[in-house]
Image (tube, rainbow, N blue to C red):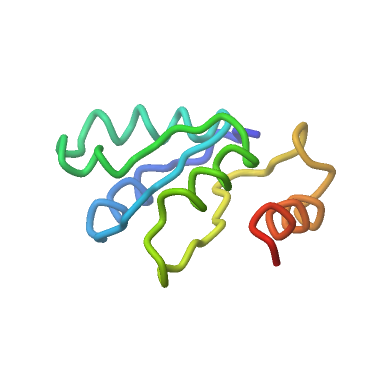
Length: 99
């Protein structure tokens, strides 16, 4: 759920980090992707992936994240309309990755 949050500070911050994968989802992910495409280098954008659904994102992570790396679920917006609340979203994520 995009609440009109200013993502510019996040866009700036992400570009200062060396991250294996940045997965963007839902409407807020589209906003972030557009903002990143406007300012980030092509090399940085190779690490940015838009994936529509959390289940598909979890499958992508399981198939592509290097062994021993951390995967952080950090939604930048509410997921109402997809999940009832953050607890349901967290439970779904844990189930998908096998926790």
